[in-house]
Image 1 (cartoon, rainbow, N blue to C red):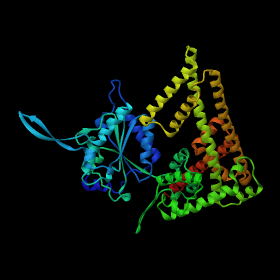
Image 2: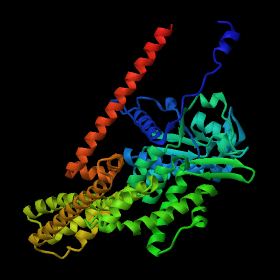
Image 3: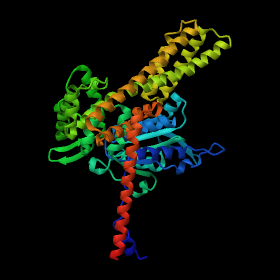
Image 4: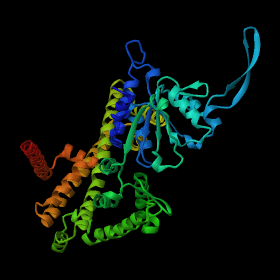
Length: 518
């Protein structure tokens, strides 16, 4: 093919479309598992020289750093994280020093470098945790100064800072922002890009919402974004500068809203604007938040979930506007979510307690005293907690379980009667069952209220869809069942299937019409 034709053949070519952060996480985790796979001789199947660094490109605040933490915890490997723009050339590469060396019988002064702070941190992590493999995550890699740029290219191409290499078993993941988000961005040349695995990522509310449910993001935020999805992630350049709202901003605002509620304070537009730096969105959300709290008072959500519903509340919701219906449904889901979450963690605690008590029982059967067996269990839990905490592999939930487990056994250190400990454990199982029963009862009352207001309309589909998407609600239903959920979910799946079939029929009709025209 002539060069001109070959060049013309590339016209219209586009980079592969970006993926959402959930898919990016899966891709990076798969890459790490592939890079760390060893053969029967203990050697990496993909040799380190062929283990391309992952280059994750995406807008700021989309969750790039968070997925690194999650991947490290799930793969049980170490994580060393740096934002490279915070470093000078000396801290990243090391300081030069003069060393005498002999070549061909003559002595020469040679410049060498001290160890890079970043490389040293990897070795320190291995020493502290005993974990020999991990992720070296470098953020904002394409926003470095002019003096640092060559070092970053060398790092991606050769996996070295100065004259020190990244240890084997440590996978490089670098992240950067596209130029439209940062005027300091530097383009990578083809030589560098040909040595990395590039992955472009974009913000996606549907994917973030899955994370938000498990994280416990404030229900007012989720209800608002269900109505105003276009305001989930926005960046705009104006004469007054950058206006933006990001996933990070919503998550941080959620933390503040919870604390403000405990303090009896209100978050107005001035407050929301400190996190949502897009004035129109900040004002819109502040107005919604005011209405959201009003709906909580007007509909008396706590009373609804106790089965105390007035005809006025049912009539009011039936004739309410779309935004109000979504908000009230969100309030119900939020309160139910608190119960499902409490039941989930109590179930985890009881399961762990049972396993530890079985171990104590074995020790006692072997002649150990109850007090000593409990002391040894406390020591074992403390040691496991210390190691997990030091290795930074604990999630917040896992840390919570360790603390509650340790506290439970520490309160029984002086106990000499195992039957008394067994009775205390029975009390915990009763408390778990009470939480499960209470959550189930509240769920039934929620269905009662929504059915009375909407009949079997689409609003019930929204409620069931959200129950399915929520981590704690889906866990509860999976473990304990709910006939009315199954009833509506079956109808929802049937409707989706009908829609899918209708879509296929329309496609077939279009194809046939096209064939007739030909």
